[in-house]
Every structure is written in C-alpha cells, then in structure tokens.
Amino acid sequence: MSSMNLPGARQARAAVRRLRPLGSSASYWERRYRAGGTSGAGSYGRNAAVKAEVVNRVVREHQVGSIVEFGCGDGNQLSLIEVPSYVGLDVSAAAIEMCAARFAGDESKSFFRYDPGHFVDRSRVFARDLALSQEVIFHLVEDDVFELYMDHLFDAAERFVLICSSDLDLRPTKHVRHRVFTRWVSQHRPEWVLAEQVPNPLPQDASSGEGMLADFYLYTRAPS
Image (cartoon, rainbow, N blue to C red; front, side, top):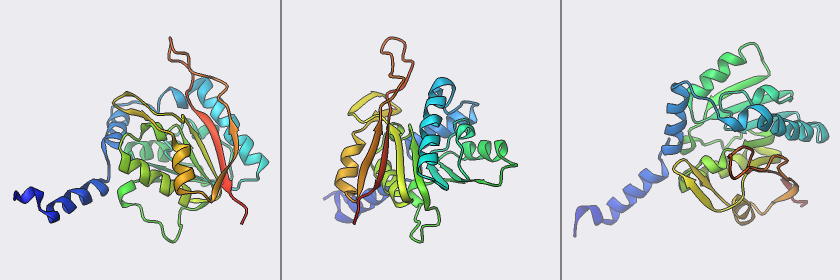
C-alpha cells in the first residue's frame, strides 16, 4: 500500500483542506487590491446606492445599533451605511489597510483581517445586532470556505442576518460560484427564519452585464 493511501495520510490531507487559511478566493482578492483594484462595480454607483438604501432602512426600522460585516472590501460601500457601531472583517489585509486609512478619524468603525480557517469566536467577541454579507457568498468558490463563512456569519448575529446575494446554482467564471445559500440556512440554521426578501431593483442585463444578480434576505431568530 502506498504511503499516500494510508489512513493517517488521508486524514492529514483532509485536515490541510479544512484548515486552509486563505483559499484561492482570498488570494485573488488580495492580489486584486494590492494591484490597485477595487471591490468592484457592486460597491460603486447605482449598485452601491441600492444596497445602502436597503441596509439603512433595516437599521432604522429595527433600531439596529451595531453591525459586523463579513467582507467589508475597500470601504466604499461602507461609506454609505449609517449605523452607530460597525466592525468590518475581510480576508484581504490590503482591504483592511484601505479601510483603516479611509476611516482613520471615525471611532465608531473597527476593522480586522478575517481568516476563516483560524477564526474561533466562542466568547462571541465579534457578535453584533446584525451580521451583514453583501455580495460575498458567490465569490466563495471553495466549499470548505463557504461552510466556514456561513457558520461564522450566523454565529456573529445577535438579532438579524442580512444577506445580499444570488440564490442559484451556477459557476460562470473561475472566481464566481453562485450557490443556493437559502438551502444551507434551512438545513444548518433552522432556528433562523426568513423575515423579509427584497427583490433586486436593478436586475442584471444579460447583454451588458450591468446590474445585479443579488436579492436581499433578512433573517431573524424563530420565536422560541
């Protein structure tokens, strides 16, 4: 029997896959930001305005006092969000550096590098009223990273989880993988129920690629 087929070797390979701190999706974004890139069209222009309108309405209507966002990007989208206290997490160190510089004078905002394979928050240091994910899920091309991300997102929510994402099975490019994330929530977090779904007012145009594929999903805990 080859040494690579021994049970111990198989377990070691599985452990390496589980503990990958930064998979190809994270490496892609780090290279992109280091090269002077941005968070993309979804965080600028009309798309950013639409997302901010939904987030700010939820904050106002539900008196949300704090947000933790998994995937803060370069901070442009954040500049449109109005909330008393904000924590931004991102897999890219370059993105965190950009946000720290952009909001250097704003004591209501904090930023941390997010390493999904080494993120263990049992005391819920990062827990906030609302856990936010904006057009991140379909950039998580690795299954293990997706699973960790979803667990961390819901674990960090005190009252609400707000997700802006597509909800379909499709892999159009190397760095995009659309997932039916609502199925994951139903299977793994049944204590959270969909309180509101806001259709995207800027549906993507198939010919030009402009617009968004993502809708908005607001989850809250089911009554006990």
